[in-house]
Structure formats: structure tokens, C-alpha cells
Image (cartoon, rainbow, N blue to C red; front, side, top):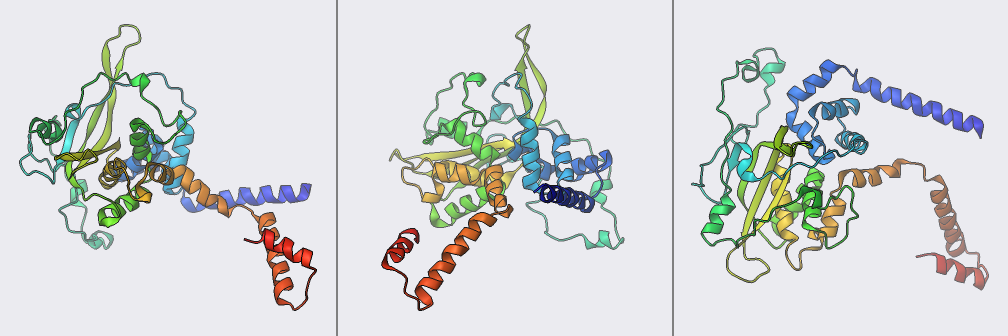
Amino acid sequence: MYVAVRGGEDAIQHAEQFYHAMAGKLTPQNIQLIQEQLPYLLDKVMGEGSLYAPELAALALAQTGGDLYEAVLLLRAYRSTQPRIAYAAPATADKVLTVRRISAAFKDIPGGQVLGPTLDYSHRLLRLDILDGLAEDNEATAPQAELPAPSTYPAVADWQRSQGLLPPIEANQIDPVMIPDVTTDAVLFPAPRAHRLQALARADTGGVLALGYASMRGYGLIHPTVNELRLGYAEVELKHPVTGEAFSAGRVRVSQAEVISSGGDSGKAGYQLGFAATLGWNEVKLIAASTLDMEMNNREPHPAHTEEFVMYHTEPVESSGFCIHFKLPHYVTFASSMDSVRKVISTFYSGDQPPQQELETIRQVQP
């Protein structure tokens, strides 16, 4: 037993060393390069890890060789060790310093369309000339032009409410301390709206996209239109523990999306909204997530668009961990299964007739 344990430990250590050797060296310079060259990938890690820390997200990606699920797990594990020392005030859309803001529902939205940083209108062509050394990436090496300071814009939904197209909402003052927290509270169904939105913010991008796309293709009850999509920077506003004065502790990249569709459970004329927001810039996830948010508001959504299904099966750490655990040794259970199969084969297909009592026992244990 002692030799087997030592031998297994040695093999595990060599396997880990092999992994890190293939992933390459961890250096501050490499981590800095990841921060500069892969900002949208960092946003995915930070959003699903629910921790805004670009340097730590870059370290997690470098340490795991770019394995997104492992990087998210590392970031969440680190997050769980940090104390919560304060609660920031809620950030509202009209106060976000917006660099991109578009609407597919209206052309002339209040404040105008702002394309911002995007590849939506670009040709999807690989720059093979750079690999061949025939050209340089002029876009990356060109001097940065001075851009105007980000601006704030009113919410499109507020204009729609003024037109009577959306029901009014009560502007209640929210105490951040009282908001339910999906990271500390047990998740029960039906879930509080705060839990749902937090779960969608931390959800796996691919999982949310798959379920949202299924809804858009006809497996759901709605066909959404993007009412408003924003990318920007939100101030992290805190209250000073001594003076009580509000101050900004910095800015974080955030994105939010609203989709709109006619009808709703109320049966009245008008529209309904779906909403989602997350740390970092991740447009495709938010369009799908806001679609699922609206889908889950319906009385009888498709089974794959119910709260329990969406919130459990788009949780990246839990779902990937459950899938990966099948790589661990299942020797005993599988050996037991093989014994049962062999016994059934020998009993029913070998020509030997067992006693009646043994036959009844086999029938009871076999599905």
C-alpha cells in the first residue's frame, strides 16, 4: 500500500510538471502581454470568476495554459479567500461612462447610436501577410489618437416608459447590503431576481449562448430585439467609513444588454424587457442572457429555459467540475457493473439454467 501511494504521488507530480513545461514559462512580461493582447478573454474570465482583477485574470490564464474553465476556477478560489470590506453603491445605466451604445429597435435613440470599439462591420479575414513578414500591424503600432472622454447617455427604456410602451417602475432606494447574494445564499426556486441576474452574470458564455440561441430559433416563446446594448466604465462608489462621504475607488469595465419583445404574462398590450449585465465586455453572452431572463418570466417556458435548468446548467465551475470528475478513477463501481453484466450474460445466454430464486434476484437488481 505504501509503495502504491508513493508511486502515484510521483506520477502526479511529473504529470503536473509536464503540463507546465508545455504551457511555457510564467513571467511578469508574459502576464503583461496577455493583459494587453487579450482584453476580451480577460473579461470572460473576470465575469465568470465574478472578480474584477485584470492582472490576476491574466495570471490565471497563463498559469493554466489558456484553459478558460481552470482559469475561472482559480480566480473564484482566490476570491473566496478575500474578505468583503465594503459594498459599492449600485451603478445605473445613465451614470456609466459609455464607449459603445447601440439599439436594433430604434434608429434615432436619445443621444444617438455610438458604435465604439467593435469588429461587427469588419471583414473576417486572417492577416496572413503579418505571418509572412510582408506587413506590420499598423493598427496596433500606430500612435493612438486622442479620443473624447466617454459620455453618459439616458436609458432607451426610460424614453419608452415616457411613451407608455413599457410599464412604469418604482425608483426605490436600494441598500447594497440587503441585496441577496448568490455566492453566499442558498439558491432556492423560484429564485429572487437578484440571484437570477447574478447567476447570469457569472454564467458560462457558451452555455448561455446555447440556451439563448435555442430560444431564438423557436424552442422558446419569444423572438427578441436588442433594445439597448452598452459597453462602458462604471465608477465603484463607496462611502468613507469615517466621514460617510461618497468617493470613487476606481472604474471597472461593464456591459449590459436589454432585449424587448411584445406581449408578456400580463396579457396587456405593450412590451416586456429582458436584462443582463456583467463585469467586462461580453456582448454575445449578454444578448443571450437577457433573452433567457425574459424567457424565464413567462408562465410556462420551454423546460430548457426554466430558472432551475438555466441557473444550474450554465454555472461554469460546477458543470465543468462535474464533467471533469468522470476522469477520476471509477474502478470499483465499473468492476462491479462488469460483474453484474457477466452474470447476466452467463445466466441468460450460456444455456445453463440457474435456480428460480437466483433468477428472481437478478431481475430485481437489473433495470
